[in-house]
Image (cartoon, rainbow, N blue to C red; front, side, top):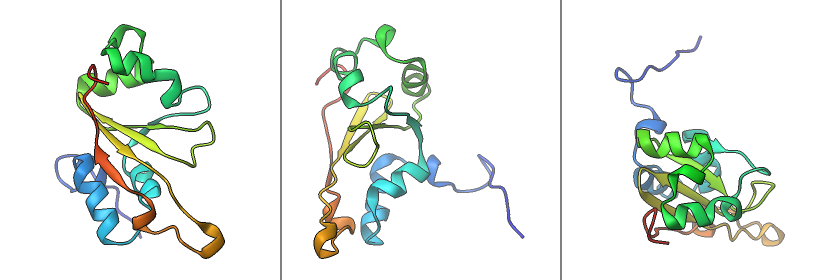
Length: 129
């Protein structure tokens, strides 16, 4: 059997602020970029990447942002923006006006792709980049 979690009555990953999800994934030594993607909605590549939205985000220009990103910012719901068109490398998590930077430094040649290979930090806010 399975249970469908509901907003307001169940604690869901998507209801946690980005820093809590990032720290949880790190404590579990998980692939942090995967945990964020199962937690939050995404602005999908290859159409939308960090490069395609960075000018609008840096300027805080909501009018030129993709609708899904603009709506997520207005609703203060976290959204993932991948930094490469295939969605394998770094990410930006935008939560309201806050931006979190997540890098991918995995080394599959030596079997390293745990939490330490996914450093993250709070970046500059929307409109401050």
